[in-house]
Image (tube, rainbow, N blue to C red):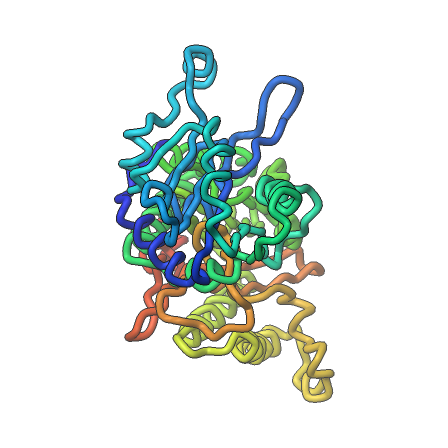
Length: 429
């Protein structure tokens, strides 16, 4: 890992909160993510299962966690299983956790090698009534490949058909969305690294620079500051490329007079930032570009004020849609008479602002949360309105990350340049 070690207090508290919601006499099993082949002789870079990391702090592949708070043998109330290293692994893959290192990282005292998993599980599973399986229930995920937890479930159901099988996701959906102080600090660190990369880019961009060169500057800054890497595939979209919401080719030359839409952010210690900005290639917005930019900025600031505890998800998005509609009328993109006659189920603003304004943020960029639950203290949400005008080859999106507190909200990216004048000032220093 590149990041500074995290206090295991985070994971100890997370486990305590999780097991407090289990049914009596329950055993829960969590797997690390699969490793995926990239080609004939290597895998893609390993990315840990966020639920497994949330409860263990272990970022290593081929790891298993068992939580059995009512286990009659105290040794197995919390058990972590790790891949045992050897001379061959050490030479070809490098260092793996020792048992002592895993105890220090996770706060779990009972650490065994993976080869002991089947025997230990069989000695305790028959003392449990309920077995919790960690299925991926993020509603943005489409299940096509049977991952480790699903494969385990099929195996257990054949061996132990009379146990009651439960879903860990129902508990984790409520827990993960409320961020602890440590999680907030890790997210803020990711935001700070993202800020420095953006300022670096502002000083680098000029006509004739390629999108991939800008991406390289961002990557350089991320790695220099011990980020795990990019929170997601970076979007460096100049001119008409910015009309494509998930443009990631990043292979065009930035032209004088165009606006570049950036959507990039750092991942630090598996926690993610998420930022969007739109800047002029030549360092000065045109009158039209500035009008569109400031319209989006006004929507972003008005929407941010609405991100408070108790706000209902759908009502929030509907209110932002009304604010955006007013701005689009002001820009001459919508006619107020047409708006008065629009179908409420298909509002006209969606022609120019077709995505949601906010999503939860955490170990997943689109973090695991219920879209039917009101916002709560401890939530971190993005705020990312945008205006996309295909006929003008112009798109502007502005995005910051917002923490809800008991006293309102805090913009975790308040120190990242966002005013058009500030952006121009840095670009022309």
